[in-house]
Image: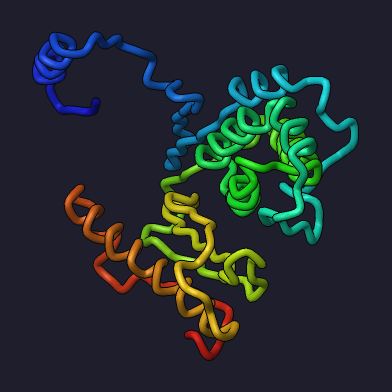
Length: 253
């Protein structure tokens, strides 16, 4: 909770605690994310990291960590989809290794401080009920990547961009199961990502421009929500001007 008066916060806590048992926690560390606020000169920064959570994940799957340097969230050119020829033996073997548990931890890290892993977790999530050895190897690769970068997080700065900016992109490589392509977008404000998503489009695109146009559509819908939210939070100065969205397809733009 955040408020201007301690008395009001205590009263809210008392009423909530009367219905659901609650506890007061350190606001600098919550849900696996550590928040560190610093002020150096005229600059104030807020850094989010998940070092302890990532180390716990690596410890749970320690025998599977790769012993080589990993520089990308997934192996180059990897593309996962739910195959119809996956055998029950392979599926059960991978599930017994803890695929679903590892995926859940990877997803939490991606949502917390590793947005570059969202494409990978989107593909890994498609394999939840019938994972393959290839999917397991990809999950282990991502775990190793996150672990090797565990001390790196997301930093927001008072000297960052004062107005949000959006970047949108889409693939033209369709999932063989439904012919839908992947898309993603990210909103940057005060030097860091505040919104990031990667998922399959809702409709089958008929061209690269079609897919890119759909991606921009979803990005702009989220932008509209963000602009209204910031205005409600009395941060209207951030959205006094148009919020710019960048796409890399001339026809879609």
